[in-house]
Image (cartoon, rainbow, N blue to C red; front, side, top):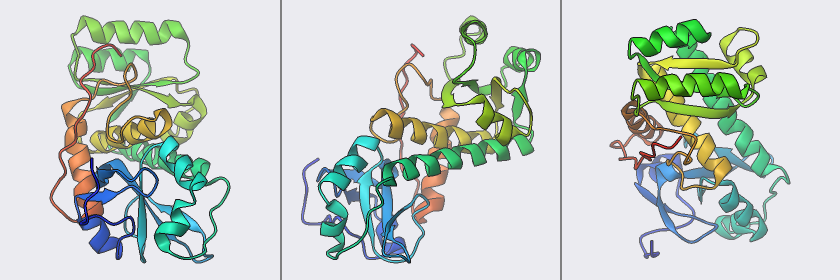
Length: 254
């Protein structure tokens, strides 16, 4: 999108900056919707820190929510240029941002589990699939290929095209989030807590795989309608405005 005089790389504060529907990416110079971006502010130690919830005080600089865009911002010294002052950018800011996105997704998964929205174990997952209750299926990155194949086949047999298939989290991380040991597969049941997790998991996947933020990676996700609602809910909660319309991938080859 072409840059216009109405967009600035640095906002005037969390409330004013996040209230706008679009912002200028400090790295690429492209105008993006704010739900496709990550806001960064200057922390107490005069160091740039990510503001995933878009609520931290002070002026903020916006970067497209992908690893490549953030790496580009660091290489180009975009933060100092946008803030118009000398600041410190940690050498691991990209890794820190990814960890925070990962932590956000895992926290949402834990909340979904507490709300009774997670089925764990083959028999429970298959039962939930049979009842058409599943909106998301999680496979640990270290899951065996046979188990993944069987569950994905069960989805195909039921023509469950609106079920998100999620990877990218280890069994150790799933264990900690769900308070269980040896969690390899899990199913998300319909509900707002599951929707929030699906939206955050998609955002993490976008950051890692350099797609436009808000779009799930081809071959990894089938994005359910519920994830659209979750995206709108998070956008509303984050900047107090009207929900943003997310363009979510409908790829069926995952």
